Length: 360
Image 1 (cartoon, rainbow, N blue to C red):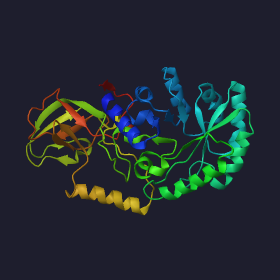
Image 2 (cartoon, rainbow, N blue to C red):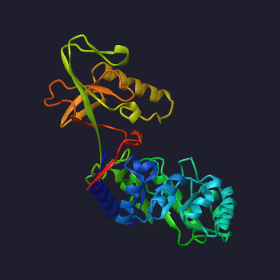
Image 3 (cartoon, rainbow, N blue to C red):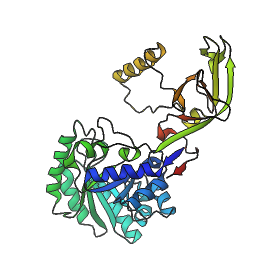
């Protein structure tokens, strides 16, 4: 994998200019596949106010690598990890009123105040304090000498649809919490919110998707995004197959005519061809998925399984194996053993074992 520092920098600069406020660069999940330490270092040097991770283990990796950026841990840590996070001077999400006491105990043991970012559940429904309970929780936090209410935040379920309603709820909470945390950092906007809800930019935006060159769902960036990511694999064999020859497990693909194919040293164990199964198990989703597969099988929609040699697409033939895949290179001149193909990928699914090379 080849990661362009220049593209990451350009995207960060464009986001900061659009937001007109501080930027928290989200580097969770290995910086969306682009490399946790490298990206956090780059965004910190570019001027990010904070970098955000989900897990204390990610924060530990940054500190062990010497990254001095201010770190926000977005998910409330397990109680046994609280002291470690406080020792690293991380800002910590608190999303349950009953957690204030354990945070205070861990801070006292660590000998430093815990920096709290109180999460308000305005409609996402996963984590956070209900708006009507927020003043009481903020008052409780303010009552502990070992806790500092540094931030108040929320997260949009869909910034382009319900975002305005969630923002209104959040702003109402801000007014109610002012006396407990008059200087708290207020943050609500994710990538989609930064684009579609200027009023949600507040004191800081938390941006991930845009930094890595991708539009968030339902919103298009008002600037040219630069893709920092390219994934490559090498052809290890190129062969001429006669009509009727089959390829792959199950012999599911059969050549209708003499066909030239190339086999690449990459497969599903590396993340090639994988799709995240993260949607609801609903009838609507089943119909959508079934319709897509049927359209490809009937030839009414191009298959999403392919690689590029230069600007030419080579479709996958047969099943994708664990560490090999075969593609049709008929009519693509110059493909031989050693030729390098560029692969489409869900970046987060690309194996962590794949080498990442950083270029200017």
